[in-house]
Length: 194
View (spheres, rainbow, N blue to C red):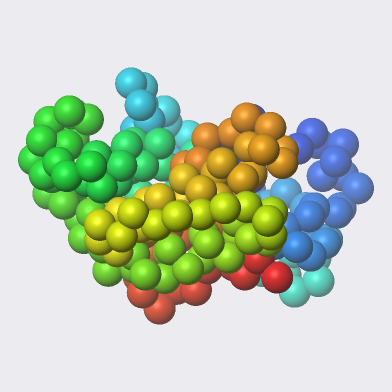
C-alpha cells in the first residue's frame, strides 16, 4: 500500500507520464482500478469511497493508494486515533476517551493496546525521523511511560516538520512516515528515514 495526499491523486496528466514517486524511489506506475468501497470515520464526519489502485509497470504488482488521513486496516481516521492516543498519554481511560470521541470502548481499547505494544519502536522511529529532518533539534523526554514518550516523539517529529516544511498535522505526518502502518502488527517494519 502506498500513502497519497488527502487531496486525492495527482492529476491524470501526472499519471499519464507513468512516473510516481513513492517511498524514496521513482516507480513507473499507472492507474489500475479501485479497491473495495469502505467508510472512514473522521473527526465529525464519515466518508465513503473506493481507494484507487496503481499498477507498477516494472513488476506488475498493484498497490492500493491509501489517503494520508487514514491508517491501513482502520475504519477511523488518523486524527481520531491520534486524539485517543494523546488523551491516553494525558492519563485518561479508554472508556472516557471512547465516550468523548463517540466510538465503541473496545475499538479505542484496541488502538491503545496496539500502540502500547509498539511504543518503543514508534518512539525510536519518530526520533530518527526528527533527527533526519533537523539534526540540531532539541528534545527532552518526560519519561512518564513508553506510551507517553512515543506520543511525544510523534509530536516532536511533527514540530520539526512544521518548522522545515510549513503547517501540517502531526497525525497526517505519522501516517505518511509509517506508510499507514502506525497500528499494524509488531512484525511490520516502518519505512526508514535513511
